Length: 88
Image 1 (tube, rainbow, N blue to C red):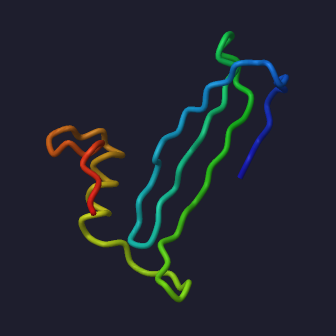
Image 2: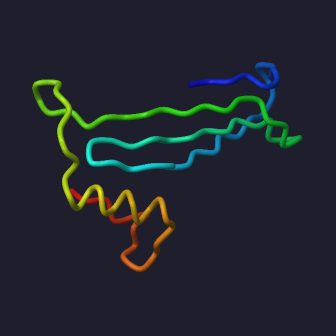
């Protein structure tokens, strides 16, 4: 989903804030805020939902370690270095 709040010009500096807002067994949701960087004016709010798929393009369950890593990152946990130690 996407909601425009204000306009920007091509030369306006912008900042995109991204947050992981939910993690499920097969996917996750991200929220976005786009602001004009020099005035901190809200321009756009948006969200995307992503689903894990297998090689056949069908939804599949996230690996347990990947889901745990995403959940820890969403909570802001630092104990297991969740923001940098991406499961391979």
